[in-house]
Image (tube, rainbow, N blue to C red; front, side, top):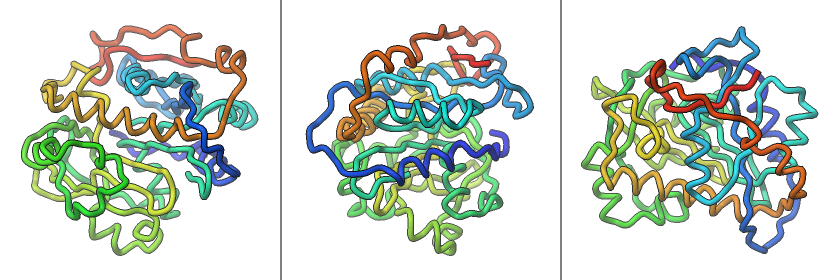
Length: 297
């Protein structure tokens, strides 16, 4: 992955989440998730901050749908007022490849999204370290099993937790990350996040692979839970039944958190903004990263 773009959308989203008010205890069974676009042409596998085009890999959309939700694209270079309007229609946000003091409004950030959130929380654009974990299937190591209570892993069967720690069931594809040592030494990060899992790169260097916010419904992964079910371009992506269960459990957890959101957006405005208003492009012949992409320009 390239060095993370420094646009201001993540900060805007986090500020919007911090401003949410009191909760409605009723569970909402029509949740909508906003997915943030990335600069560039995902069909050709390029990420270029200089272009007005942006994309969402369709596997992220399918991942959200697998948990029982619909998607509204949050196009990163739209005007702030348009992004805020869309945020008023969603029950959670996904940063692809926040927070609430009283209201469940989950944020899930993975890979590049985790890196962006780490830069925002630490207020340090140089917080990331280099790792060799491109196109690599890996294990997840659990430093403290007691920390899994109430986390995304709480609903995993103990046998699956054991398999995650001994078998390569998750896909890593990144060149940057944060070591446990660096997170512990950074007061902002260590007070904000608790470490759920770590993973080794190709050289045995250990990086943080899953974290959860201490006080807020924010979960971040350096790995890609969506790929086991929906992406086939890279040979190292695990496709076993156990790997598929990991993806499904993760999707179910994320959307279960979104169902707790008190937001009840108008149905007509949701329909006007759903990603179904756009057509996906088959990119499997030109890109190893995505079978399908949604392009926005």
